[in-house]
Image (cartoon, rainbow, N blue to C red; front, side, top):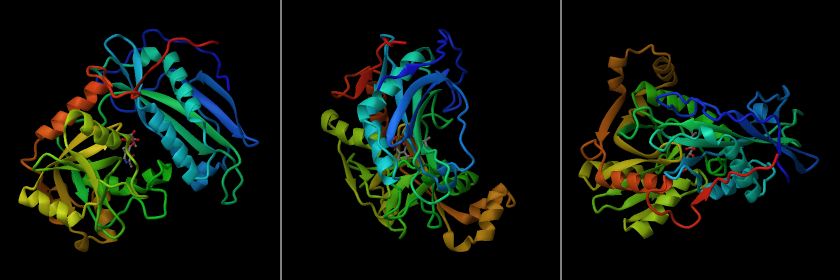
Length: 384
Ligand code: PLP
Ligand code: COI
């Protein structure tokens, strides 16, 4: 398929806000492609615009929608490179499969992403300021109200020059642990990057924020195993330096950051593995000093250290209390009655976390060699 370029006006010197926040600034263009009559058609790059959808759109009514999150970096030589973009394209197709949406050839997704970045290349921040966050998304755009897969779809890509995901930057965060909310259930859509999973995480996420935590550390539906940290995989570090990441299941998104850390451990000589982690063992491990560091792993958040967990006293919280907390009807200084605190190590960023953060971000920014195929240069040519 040939991508068409419509009304392209490249800004050579766009002004980026300072500091650059995550996901707030848009570039000048977006990519669009339609699916109907069982075929992808009309791939195009157009001026950034609103998308017009019908009131009956399946994605709105029944949540048939998925997205990806990837990054591109400007290296010292001025060239732009996407990071492990083939993995994002593969995962988009896995999400599409789980949500009964049509797949898009992996190489075409990469071509579309690179073509769009090329057009908006002047928006990519210098690497000391941030990166270009890439957000491809795919949704059912058909408008009949039967609960069936849509016949029509839209695939689009937007770009967001971005700084740190957490406004505090690389500093110890906090997670709320609760039995009350779950992100995903076995046999459901937890392993897809499905929009609906994020809707399910909004209320618990807001609750976490009321307690001063960044996100929720989700447990499995039986409240026995550690699963995910909001929009990140979770990790902890044992006293002997081993990084432990929860084994991926059908309720955990297979993080490209986790996969990369596991692969890098073999090259850069640190220890990392996956395990099913019992929440009780995890908490005991922190108390006994067997676990010395913890954090989250994700494209937007990179490697996000966690210094403290809040254990919600679930038995004393009913639906009414939850509403009161969410509606700010309980004064902030009285919220302490609802949780216990547990600090990891001495609550600051540990040396293993610092080390993987530095190795990882140096690879992304081209300061140390990347494993083969991880970085793909965005070529400057495009034909109108
Ligand atoms: N888990 C969830 C639920 C996420 O939204 C993300 C973010 O993409 C991740 C994990 C981390 O995945 P990745 O490292 O591929 O960005
Ligand atoms: C990412 O890390 O790319 C994500 O998708 C997280 C996002 C929901 C902000």
